[in-house]
Image (spheres, rainbow, N blue to C red):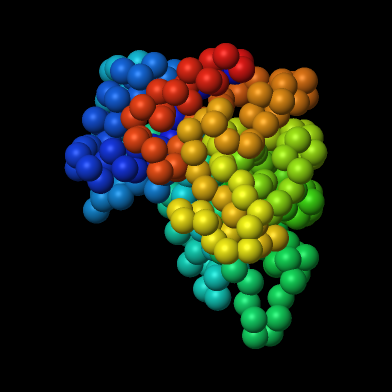
Amino acid sequence: MKISVSSYSFLKYRKATNCTYFDLCDKAKEIGFAGIEFFDLKGEDLLNTAREIRRYCEAIGLPIVAYAVPANFMAEDIESEVQRVCALVDVCEALGSPIFRHDVCGKLPDNPPCSWEDAVTRMAPHIRRVSEYALSKGIRTCTENHGYIFQHPERMESLIRAVNFKNYGWLCDIGNFLCVDADVESAVKTAAPYTFHVHVKDFLYKKETERPEGFFPTSGNNWLCGTVLGQGVVPVEQCIRILQNSGYNGWITLEFEGEEECLASIETGLSVLKNYI
């Protein structure tokens, strides 16, 4: 396994310094990461931006290991959404990334009511179309257990089995299972056979009636707050062992979304991960 970092982890640093994507690449390389993952690039000409980032990363020897984007396969105009996501696959290709991660939906419609099982049936053929398009470009697609609806391991497994396409798999985010109060190690065992890519993060976790300052709710009305890897409750080392024992030998991407100082927290996270792998 090799360790990469998500551009998302540098959010506070970017806001404080107004740095460029190239600056982020330099910082990731300087800290000691073997690769970088980009989230939802912004710009008027995304293809050209992606090509420039790729050239820069190749020049400094920093592989781009994944590209992640938001998506909604429950959109009313599903044709437009499929075409939009396929256009982002083109951006992934321009980056030279072998992995394309997309969301599936943020919420379910209320009128008429729609269960998550109904959503799986409705979304699966459109997700497969995107993955078929990505396969023609040599890119594997995946969905992360992200967003309250599809953070549950059993729901994610159902979705992947419904799509039923060799080029579509799971981005296993070890920390995100806590957002639905799932047993993390059991959830990773469920995800392992389908895993194309891995995210690691850490959380503080509290069971209180009132919201602690800086925390957000889980689906079970408990509370989470991002923190430095190794300083929270996520059993990261045990989960990495589960993935290794399943045969996973791909990239591990560090995500940081805590209140602590950004760069120092990212550096600590890398040091912790090196001890686990």
